[in-house]
Image 1 (cartoon, rainbow, N blue to C red):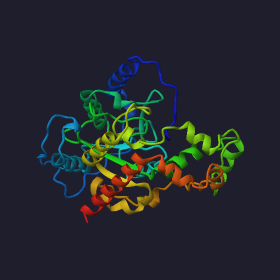
Image 2 (cartoon, rainbow, N blue to C red):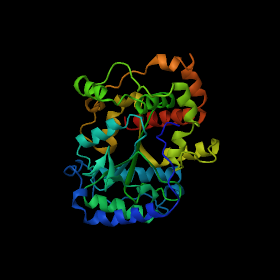
Image 3 (cartoon, rainbow, N blue to C red):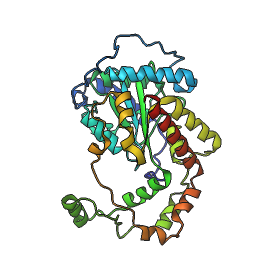
Image 4 (cartoon, rainbow, N blue to C red):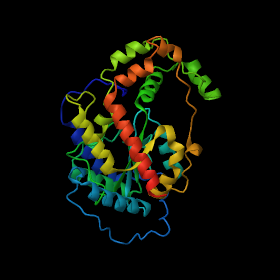
Length: 345
């Protein structure tokens, strides 16, 4: 499926207890404060004007399209006024690191201790998506008091039972979506990249190689494909808060994931066209520095086609054939991204 697999932990309640303890500790932990000074309020914003968006509880699942659009507008204005949190769904190998780097460059309020934008406490990412709705609300409010206004999440996302609506919770949701086949291939070459001392030293001195190299113990690409079954529905599972092997992921689940994307997310970007979305980011978030090319930290090597073709010559078509739901979701996301980009022009 393209996400790192780990042995499932024994079912217990410790992670929920840990979340509660983490939320309490945040109030007292000064080292959690945002690592950058607060963003200046955007000139011309009516920051003291009360938002008139309709609310129906605190959960996103209750929203209609019209109410969701009004709530997103309110939350975006509050963010530009330095009074809301940007929640970034960081898709693994989806190109999201560039947005995290842009957030740093814009002093967007990352937690002082974070892992690629994910807040950390005690050396662990805070699994805030497992918190109940009211606990999440308090947690995000506590972070804002500490000037933390950017929260990435690469390991999880709330489900319908605890996904907070943009308003009155003061949350702006963002995601970068990548074409599914490319993301999966990139994941293979990342997971099985060379990690020996010579390769690491060479990368530090010269940067990435032109063509991706894999370690000696890497499985063939064909074997990797079979290991990662099911390949499909990665995006659907992420946005619905499902586990990696949820029992039923079908067209109904796809439709629900599309609803979450359309209603909840303000910023929808495409990895393949990041450079086109600078004006949208500037308009929606108020970030002054919105040139994505200026924040691309690395040049990724091209995939080694010989390793892919050793599996089968039509490797690209075959992977795509196994990902009907994700390809449908990506096409839908691309349409929404284009629509949102043109809306403010």
